[in-house]
Length: 610
Image (cartoon, rainbow, N blue to C red; front, side, top):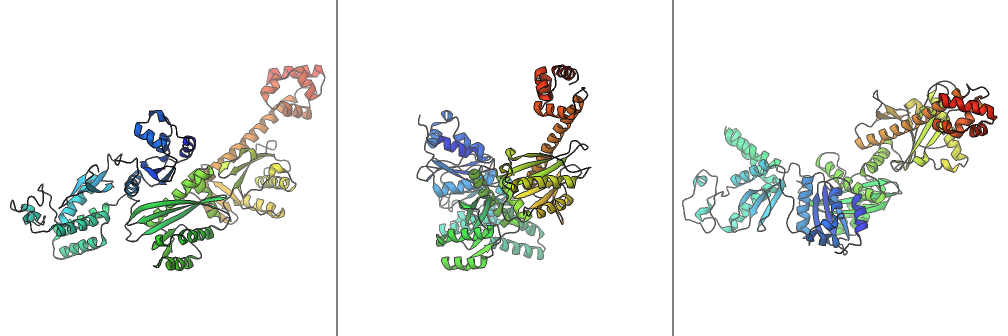
């Protein structure tokens, strides 16, 4: 059996995918798409191709042997993934795609391929001689839409075959009650009939604006004529058409072509996703990596110019972006000149447009996560934090501080470091409070920050570099106190506090002038809560260790001839209670610098009391 030499690369790339639904596109060494599939969870499905390959059937084994790379498109739901899979298979006709798979449980509308086509409901799309619309979320909705289309356009629902059965029998009751145009009479030409069928298909596919307006007018006229039953029926037809697109975010009712462009950033790299909608559905998606070295709005403008300048024939009438651009009017003029039609650039604020921006943003974040080795949540949370606080750049290094104390003798400060959204434990620091008398959290926090900054300014490499953002465990009082220290040291670092609620959960970001709520952003809330919990855990563990050492030290001074200095030397050398108990008389004598008689007395005391 052949073994794909790229298997290690493919496994590693697949393992970095998220559990989002989506479509994956397998490619050969020439870049040609050889297979399109859909997945409820991209990571689970794609990784299955590159593990346990000896268990694959012959078709899958041949596919895996020919995969050089793969691409993917994240979708909002599994249904959207299936809709997109159908579309991409039709567009690319991949070598290893034969029939649409995993269609169980979905609903379709079937259009037969004959001289006088019929529109019917179907549970699958396996008939190669028919066209299909769907899939749809609701079988009831699909059936109702078929029934309404047949009624509205008076299409035949009998089992007669045309033109074979022309004029063989009298028209049935449906013709007489105006539910059928009476094709069986042989008075309707094939061209006329197919024109009506196309109108019905357009009606089902998009809820044709003209059709809905016509139905609404008929409904109003029926109501004015007191034909309430007819008006209710027309109302139900309109509702049925409206329901057809429920849950299908891959599709759009917009009558124009448009592109949706969003950017995700992480430190020195950014990812841009371009999702193209043509004739109401996604037809393509492209992804690009660019540097994150300058202002985000300008970076987007530069990308748009570089992208569309090389493809003027592909510029749509509408471009949706995820951020306001200062030069959007100039760009619109430039693009309109290139493609010779009017172009608009818009930032959607709500509804359908905003949901499509989120979809593009999610795709950009997924690609960036593969490149930088961070999860989508981490990437989005850092970007959201920078936007929320108005930072000049996404914070690469975040330091967080907390003060923990039990009385005068065990007051400590903890510093934790996060790099690219993850804990960097090699950078954690512990501070024993030395200069503050009494319970004064503000003064303790000032001492810790001052010592940390001074160590850096004095050239201590272990305290380099300075962070991009400092987060304090505390409110605006802590922020105000520490701001004075930074000003005195002439250091410009964004500084904020993390405020907890009565249940000790992070609820807001504190600044000098008030608080910024974060509960509405789940990714940001989770990240900041994690940081605050981590710095609290770290400082508390240090404080508890200090308290234990203090307790041991006090106990050791009960031995005659062991003062605080000797006790401190013993604790510092042996570090733990267990190590102290294992120490020999000779070791105790050497560390405490006492004679053997005193060392033996100390040895017995430790064995009895520790």
